[in-house]
Length: 403
Image 1: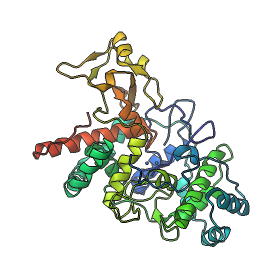
Image 2: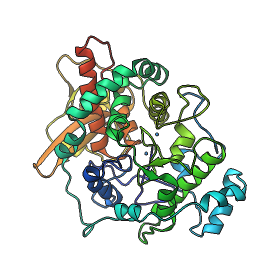
Image 3: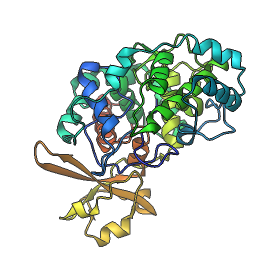
Image 4: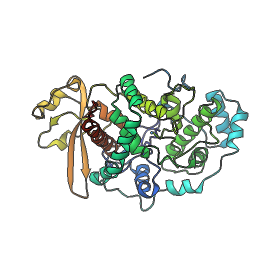
């Protein structure tokens, strides 16, 4: 599921400044005709203009390699671009016999389609940000209809996930809908080949951290295979190597995936229970707070642009925003976001329409950006979740509204 790109300091996946951008990062790589331009933008978006990029608690999360760095910290450790050295390093890192790695690596082939799809087209200049166009791709009738059916079919496990992790069923359902339209677009690329291609045969001299990150993802896949968590020979996914309904990358499968159906095996492609619990665990491990809306019910003052920080963490206390002129909306209630540094002002910029939409985001919004480092992505997930929850309420179900 989770693939993150960086544009500055190695150590993975440090954030460039997270202004809203017209891309989804690496988690939306299936509907190629529609999403290829989105992905290509994600690969070139980190720049001095403040654009950013982005891949996912119970103790049954997969933890192969749990003695080493987890999640993001694991994704950019040094691994050689020399094949033989890489094999030696992975064997030492994960305590895997070299023969096992060599056997798997012997099956890896360069996929020219991956190179074509991952290579930015055009001049590589600045990309126009268009919030409404982006939102309309994901908050739309098909995902609302299919998301409602998915929720109805999986109500019990969604309720279990919400009770266990504090993440609303609406948000979990929305992420799976944005990622793969509820399993319809999980990708048909052999993950082994995709990661091998991007790690060893698609270098970008100005951004060596990208190939490095893919080599770390390949190392995680090899480890998962050795520990019988993922069949590296058979696993298919996106052309960037993301797997299953929630599009987890191998590093995220290692550290955040959950055996939701308790069958002793994690299957993010065919087990909706595993996928649902894994999404909830990922968000919980990245700071999700129960009983907190994604957006606070706040009216911002004129000049809200001056409050926009552009980062991926909350920067304001409620009292600080009040001192700058923010007020609670009429009839709105407060919440735990009013205590501590829990808020940030975000700008959903639409340069085509010449508009800005400012919202007051809570810590939970920023937890979603850890899934994909884009304001546009996180806001679209929240809006789709809101629409799905409204449909559930209209059908008589008591559900948690995301905001």
